[in-house]
Image 1 (cartoon, rainbow, N blue to C red):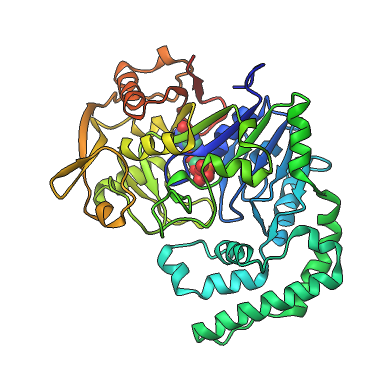
Image 2 (image 1 turned 90 degrees about the horizontal axis):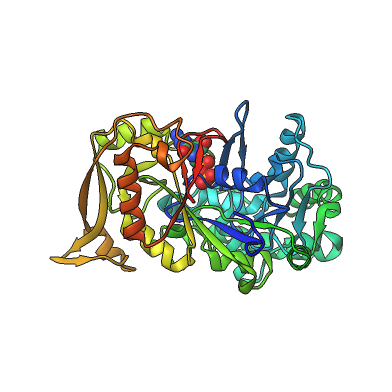
Length: 427
Ligand code: GDP
C-alpha cells in the first residue's frame, strides 16, 4: 500500500460499518509509521485476530498491535477517558507496549458520565439503535459549543465552570425526559481529577504532529470507524452516527489538509450487514438472514447485538466510492459465501416502477426500494487458503470482477478469513 508516492492513506468503511476495517488496518499498519483515528468514539469496536490472540479495540487504533507504529486519536474523535485507560491497561496486561506510542489530540472532545446517562435514557437514541455510550450527546455538546476538550484538563477552574454548564444542560434534558436520574458536577470533576495525570502526558497537537510526520516522509494511515452509510451527512439519515465517517472527515478529524491524502481504501464485506435500525434494501428474510449471520458470525463487537444481513448492494458501494473518492476496495469475508450455491448482487432498486442505480437520499424511496438482483454461481469450495488471485475459484473471481465493474473501483485486497495471513493483495 505504501510506496514513494503513497504516504497518506485513509481506510474507510464503505457500507454500514463492521466491514473488517480493524483487520485491514492491522495488516497495512505493519508498514505504517503512524495510525490515527479520526472520528467516532468508544461505540466502534474493531476485532483483530493476530493468529494466537484476539483483541477488541474501541478507541485505540489497531496499529497499536505493531510495536514500531505510533498511534494517535484525532480531534474528530469523542474520547471516553475512563474506558480509554481500561483499554490501555488491558493491552499492557496482554503484553502490548503502549508507553510512548499513543498520543491524544488536545482538541478532542470528552465523553463524560452525563453524556452516557442522557444517551442511555433517551428514547430517540433507542429508536436509532445507538450503543448508549454517550457518543451522540457528546457530539451534540460539541456542535452546541458546550463541549469539554482534553486541553481543558490543564485548567481546573475553567474545567469546573465548563462542567457546571454542561451538567446543567444534561439535567434539563433529563428533566424533560421525565426521569429521576440526574448528572452530577462533583463526581464528574473527581473522575477527571483522577484521569488528568494520565491523559495530559500523552496529549499533543496531533494535527501538527501528523503534518510534520507527513512532511518528513512518514507513512500515515488514517483509520475510520463505522461506515459511509452511517455518515451524518451522506448516510441514511437519521439512522446514522453523529460524525463524518467518510474520507472528507479524515482530514478534518486529524487536522491535516485534504490534499495531503493520497489514497482512500474502502472496506466492504462480500455481502451487506447493518446493526441497529434504518434502511437496508437488500436485507434477507429471517431464515436466510440467520444462515448468513451464523456463517459470518455477525454479532456486534461492542454490544453483541445480532447484525441484519443481506446480499452485496452495489448501489450502496458505488455511492460510497463516489462520496469517498475510493482509489481501491478491500473485499472482506469472501469465505463466508463459500457454501452458497447461488449468490445475488444488487444492481439497482425499483421504486414506483422506476429503476434507480444511484443511491437515493430520500428515506421514503429507500423504504419502498425493491432490490434488482443479478444471480451468480457460487463456488462451493473453501477459499480460506487462497493467497493470490489465481488461487481463487473462477466463480469467486467472476463475482469479484462483477463487483469491480458495478462499483467502478479496482479491488486491491480480498480477505478470506479472520487471521492476519488470510488475505490476498490483488496487483
Ligand atoms: P470493523 O469494525 O470494521 O473492524 O469490523 P468488526 O471488527 O466489527 O468485524 C469484523 C469481524 O470480521 C472481526 O471479527 C474479524 O475478525 C472478522 N473478519 C475480518 N475479515 C474477515 C474475513 O475475511 N473472513 C472472516 N470469516 N472474518 C473476517
